Image (cartoon, rainbow, N blue to C red; front, top):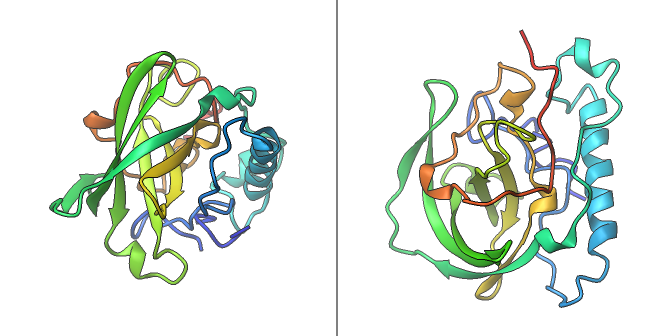
Length: 219
């Protein structure tokens, strides 16, 4: 696994403030298997790795007062119905734009492609972004970023939405595992500057997978 990844190097997400390493898990795309064989084990390993990141003072976004008693994040139960193969349409002519963050900083992004998929009986699409500065970092050349909101936000999950880390696929499909959806680091610590989810990436469905909200908050 790329433990350097959005382990945040400490990668604070796309710049000074929240430049985080690509997450704890290996973001390489895996071949989609119809029966999703091994997907549950993959999710369990993801959760264990994320918990270890949060326990480690070198990589944890948690303030010391929370980390010292930290045992585990609150996850939805692993559910392979939230592992979906999406049609991936690249957007090579997209114009870079400045994505707002939780601070005054703006992150220069470009829409690398759009994922089209079915979830919970409905058809959806999400924009997937590439950061022009981050791809210059060694090990991040194929890194893609998918922020999204859904109908669980503000209830079971963080009100500002969640993120997925992805890699550029070799073909015209991309695997989205919403069990690996995680909270922006600013959920846990206000020192981080994290990209805000664009309105176009609002899913009109409940995504009952991935990391739930952090209840302790911060000062």
